[in-house]
Image 1 (tube, rainbow, N blue to C red):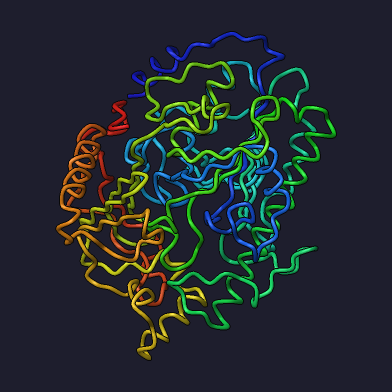
Image 2 (cartoon, rainbow, N blue to C red; image 1 turned 60 degrees about the vertical axis):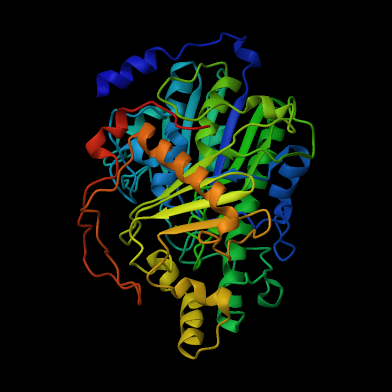
Length: 492
């Protein structure tokens, strides 16, 4: 297998523009930042002036989607340009096979200086010293410098970003993977200078209980995002101070939805839709908006093409570089996503178009509140208490439904938060059957399957308390079909 992908690596040629013209790339990824929780995406209760400036000076994507709403599988998917089950590391914390290729690895081979700073979480757990690569797994091949942070003492892991920028060699184009812990639980940014989130001003989604505990929880979450925004601003200042901002392609996105009930790990837009902003002054018209469907697996080939490197055949995404100069053009017809083990046994698959969303659930017997940290959250405890008191409305009660539907179908153009399941509505039978067939084709072409023995729950579904000290691994989806070596892309 390693030889197989090595051959694909050598087939990734270089387009050979002048080295001085090749853009620097800075990739900033937040942790559990929901798509609705930035000022530039319409949230008036949060202050994100630096990310909003990125939007004003670059391009905002209105329909960008993750391949999974789960931390390490999402990051690995972005890094490899492949669907989670095709990386061989589809579940949270699952080790990443050495046969995978990483787009920063290809940039490095093409002459870029590459560095990582902040959270790692490419399947493996790191040591605690800079460049301590023990236990980091094969993704270390992608970086010249590694500076891993842990979320300790309440910090967000962004403190090294500017230092890494300053200390790079000045005779090469550079790629930086800057990963924050903000806004992952537990919270630690309430006392950060300048943070002003007020519980009275937060936006409470319709599926949560609008109570004091939930509002305080959301305010602390906002403060985490505002701390992340501060460091985004510091990176932008440093790029400008060094005079390289004009030829630097700056990306901001997130790995999954907010760490609240009915968000993180869910395949609704609250979990799977992601903020995506790109600023590249020499190529993107300020204030641009792209409404085309894009997937995060399209980022790897896009950034490689911008750098003059041919994406390898192993990448299942496609470059959307042309959107940066022509944001109104069409791109994808479909985006796909999956929900595998993340604290709890699960197997769900999703296909989405501009107007419709279809979800297939092969573990419908389980309730689905969210990951364990969301289950333990003040927001969940308050929602649970009101459920026991029979005070919830239909939208708030949905999260407690068990068993879940084996099929869900939503007209998202009229139901943006996916509350009304139309799977049994005869008016939509034709569209439902079409998306069933599209999802089946994607499963078959990409080598997906649902093993009988999936990884079981590690936490209690009601309390969120840990049941077992170690993960009792089951069989990885797609492993029996050799999905980690399959290069077919599925429907586009």
